Amino acid sequence: MKVEQWYTGCLAQGAYYVESDGEIAIIDPLRETAPYLQKAEENGAKIKYVFETHFHADFVSGHVDLAKKSGAAIVFGPGASTDYQMHNATDGEIFKVGKLQIKALHTPGHTMESTSYLLYDENGKPYCIFTGDTLFIGDVGRPDLAIKGDLTQEDLAGMLYDSLRTKIMTLPDDVIVYPAHGAGSACGKNMSKETFDTLGHQKQVNYALQDIDKATFVKELTTGIDPAPQYFAKNAQMNKMGYLDIDTVLEQGTKSLDIELFEQMANHKMVMILDVRKPQDFAKGFVPGSINIGLDGQFAPWVGALITDLQQPILLVCEQGREEETVKRLARVGYDNALGFLAGGFEAWQNAGKPIDTIESISATDFAEEIKTHPVKIIDVRKNGEYNAEHLEDAIHMSLDNIEQWIGSFDPAEKAFIHCAGGYRSMIAASILKARGYHDIVNIAGGFSAISKTDLPKSSFACQSKLSI
Image (cartoon, rainbow, N blue to C red; front, side, top):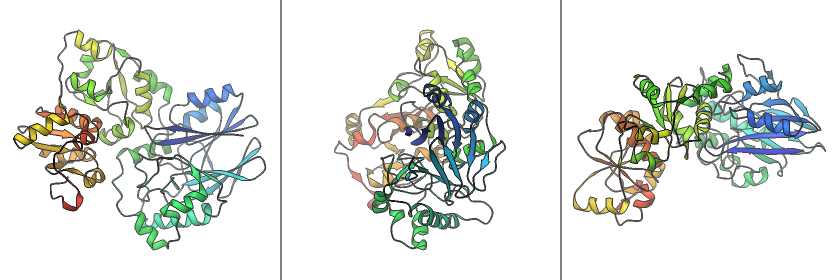
């Protein structure tokens, strides 16, 4: 028996590979199918099932392409409806994978079709459970993503309470919990950095599994939920209806475009130039009008949060050798319209004498000296919780998540210093402002982690009174 977790940090997502006696089951696969097919070929095994825990997987699953290429059956839980062929599991249905058994447990609450899959070992003993977004390590799934008709988030939270207590908490304590997401995902509020745990330990430390009544559970679960990123629902629809095959997406997105063609395409008003280099490299020089979302960060979630049109035509500026990786990671969250990349990268553009833009950057130490001599406008683009925990006394909170709501009120004539926690998000914000015509922007290198080491006065939520947007 082989049970492997394939964890993708950028998406905080766990996919699973189960193999026994020449047969394989894949649970919640990523969009690209090659790794699963290659593993199966290396092991001389056949992918028999692709199990999907729910539609709202917060990324585009690879189930459709993987089934086409391997001949595997796609399995969803009760009530799921798709535009392609799949098998609707009944609650308690058993699937055989070699000498193993996988039991479908309908666990509605996060969504109506949410289903967990309990794996029994060769001796018929419960070994692990793949819980999707029903149960995380340290948390449970949010109940607000699949509200339809008269159904409310309170209704779904109540269903989740019942699912946990009747289907999961009754299992042996030594059963391993394998969730679909970990810390960094927007699917829960208190997810642990650990990516798996025993059910027994979760019963001790997970607030949602404590001895509380349903009303208390529902109130806790529905309080303080941040708005879901806009791409969540769109990815769910792709998972339900199907999508362009990944090979076609990769072929189109990895086209090498010479400078002349790249410039010609970039002049089209509908095209976005996405520069995925490191923030510090982007600041030193970039193609005018480019947006920077660095590949070496939470790339896919920020693309999904900030680029509102999945059909957005995108031209790429990458570090050489990372073009295919970029297209794959865009496709994971449904952005299938990359048109190609700048051949030779930004260096080729610069060497050709083409116009470039820059973003001024200042160290936290120099910023501290400047702010002492005269007042400046400080923009903190971190999330609410980060800002509330501690921030500069004079900082205005304008979270990156909500940039489309506040960018119109930004004064282009006023110089502004922008920071986040470490510099990744502030460069995204600065690049968007630059692209919209706001040029007097200064990025504070190192973000609040560097600022916190200075003697500048700081505050917290209890005593903050500044504008928060």
